[in-house]
Image 1 (cartoon, helix red, strand yellow):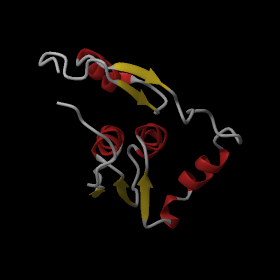
Image 2 (cartoon, helix red, strand yellow):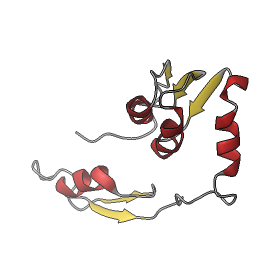
Image 3 (cartoon, helix red, strand yellow):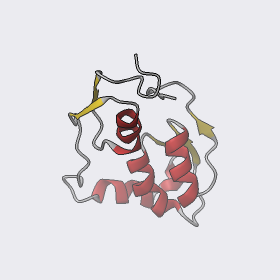
Length: 118
C-alpha cells in the first residue's frame, strides 16, 4: 500500500446526491470514486404547501426535528426570528446549518452515520 495514497487501487461508491468534499478527499487518497446517487433532492410534489402549512402553525408542536442539511436549509429560513418549538437535528452538520438560520438547536444526534477518512 502506498503511504501517500493509501486508497490507491480501491473503488469507493458514494450514494449521496452529491460527491462533495468527501469524494475529493477520497480521490486525493488515491481512490477511484464512483458516484451512484440513491436519492434526488427535488421540490415537493405539492410545491411545499404542506411544509408551509406546518410552519405556519409551529405553536402546535413541541419539537421540530430536522433530518438533513437540505431540510435545515428549507426549514431554517422559515424559523429565523420566530418563536419556535425546541429544535433537534440528526447530526452536527444538520445542526450547524440549522443554527446558522434559526435559534439554537437543543438536541443533536450523536450516532455515526458515515465514514470519515483521515
